[in-house]
Length: 159
Figure 1 (cartoon, one colour):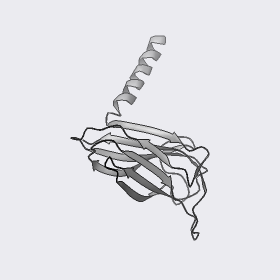
Figure 2 (cartoon, one colour):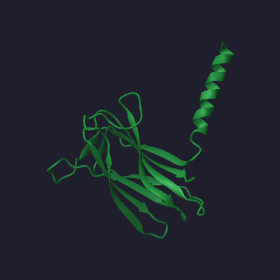
Figure 3 (cartoon, one colour):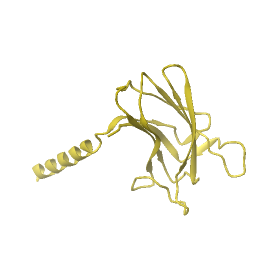
Figure 4 (cartoon, one colour):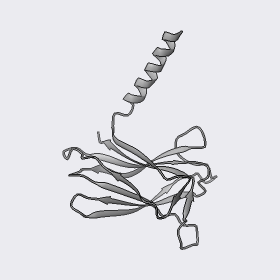
């Protein structure tokens, strides 16, 4: 019986490892119980092969406390030459009925959001991510964004 269970566990672990061959960089940072509007999540990217191309993703872990349909992010990519490219992004986070999108079996969902495709790197980069959610009809941003618990950044090798 013990051998059967060990073999099954080994098979499952092997499947999980082999299913993620594209992953080059994958890191999460906690934002606590609520993501403050002035809190910037920063990722120091490793030096990448300049002859290859990569796809970039923003990963989020959220729970049922997230009360909005969309999420707005300001993402700044700091280039090795000192320049910074800034993008304002909008992602749909929930269905019209309010159920959260993303993967997961419990109230915690994980969303893998496309950021950039087919990117070439030359040197070391930094990525800074900040939430920019506003309530409908209000100008000031949401100070404490409940429901987002972790922000991640992922780099995958392009096929």
